[in-house]
Amino acid sequence: MCDPWEMCSTSEVKAMSFVRDAAAGWSTHNMAQLSRVYPKGTRVDSTNLAAAPLWAVGCQMVALNFQTFDRSMQVNQGLFSANGGCGYLLKPPHLRLPSEALRRPFGSPPRKLLKLQIKLIAGVHLIKVAQDRVERERWQLDHCPLLKPHDLSAAPVVSPCVQIEAVGGTFAAAASDLDEAVHGDTWTSAVKYRNGLNPVFLEKVEVGVSDPDLSVLRITVWDRPTAGLSTTNKFLGYATIPVSALRMGYRSVPLRDRNGCSVAFSALLCHFRMSNTHLPPSLAALGAAEKLSDAAKRATAGRETDSETASPPVKATPAAAGAGRRRSHSGKPAARTKAAVSSPDLVA
Image 1 (cartoon, rainbow, N blue to C red):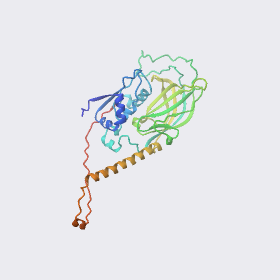
Image 2: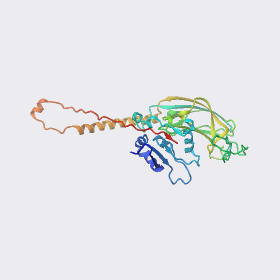
Image 3: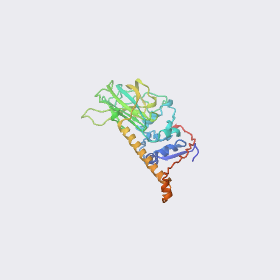
Image 4: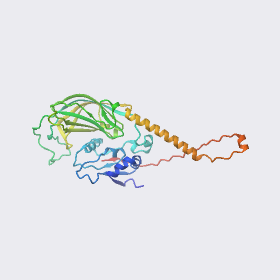
């Protein structure tokens, strides 16, 4: 085994094969070692890989192309905005402590879900398509090319709709009714035609996540023009929030533009409520199937053990037949040892 401070660098292709074929073993490896994943060389257009599956197996560093602010970069920005935005997050217990990993084997369905009930109330001062209205942040210097004057836009008035999704963990979905949701579902609001100043939605959505420490709530706003003008949705803005850092009650959610910059005056008004709930049928059925499979494996293993430990048949003798004794098998399970391992932090 390598020293704890030594790091393994893995290409995207090999890393995804590990996630697909050896996720549990790689998760155990990452409890004691550092892992870094970099994009494959064929991404000549600087697109990004999906980082959430790699975080789910405990990878400490996932390299992304910062010059392309796509969905992966938005989720990355949201997750690492927690802990003061310092860039370091503590991994969940089941990804850094062997004792917790035994209690929750990797890939097994969770015992319960964290349920978010979100009421989308309204929006305010939504930007137009290709409009620049950047609000300066601490990291932006005077010569930053993203800082431009707030000029009036001649673009058409937008017809906004809002999409809400959850990213990360064993189960993450958004739907009007969480009981009907499956992993990866996205909820979409109604379109408010030709009103980007103060659209009123008054709609409710339920979001379920199994791993709050690894999940990000992603809210995007799109321009969906009326029929006859265009059938292509155009991106207006987004907000990504770590689920573990969500605050309850009425909240103003500030939006960011396509470059990840804060948009002046633009926000969504929402109400958040959090609770624990039962597993949806899609996930409960998976858990029941895994329990049946585990029970079958244990029964098969028990039969194999009995057949291996049983003594070979003995030819009966009159004395033995008269005794009529019954033979039983017993054995003690081997003692389990648990090695102490370090638990590196999750690093941006």
